[in-house]
Image (cartoon, rainbow, N blue to C red):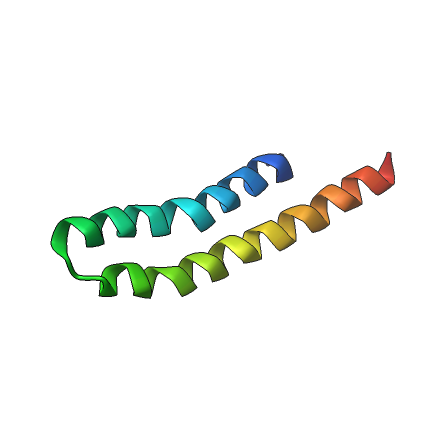
Length: 65
């Protein structure tokens, strides 16, 4: 299986922005802001972990060239 760190980086950034955005819309519709508040930390941890690993792999690939 081929690694694609650029795709992983893009997906991680989408997770950091997209999940809270989805729950922001849900909170605006329902009026229950707990949806939004409780989505921030897990989305940040999941997305930031992916960003760190993607950047590390991109640096390794760039160093080999």
